[in-house]
Image 1 (cartoon, rainbow, N blue to C red):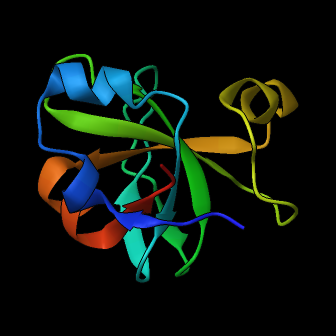
Image 2 (cartoon, rainbow, N blue to C red):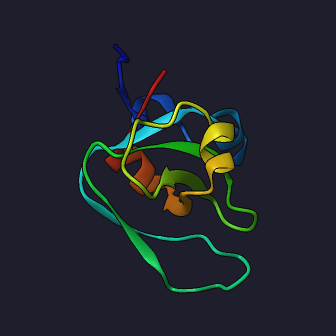
Image 3 (cartoon, rainbow, N blue to C red):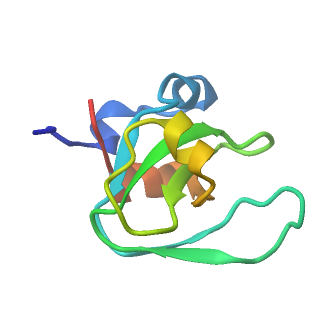
Length: 109
């Protein structure tokens, strides 16, 4: 069984630390509505996350100090790796700013 920690106790801030977290599992502590990252279409689409939804840290946003976190779009077992989730094709990449990440997410150590 995994022991989850509040993101604020693991993540102190900054792009370099976001890079170090790449591939780590995170889960939403509360219901959230987050913007989908789509650099090609630059749409205003958003996605609802239920409490307990598990995703994986992808990369820092290329031009902002935000996280890009990959979440599955279909129900099923929680993702275990970034590679397996993105290879399946049923995912969305969401933008999460640092304050929201620290307050609303937990991370698996």
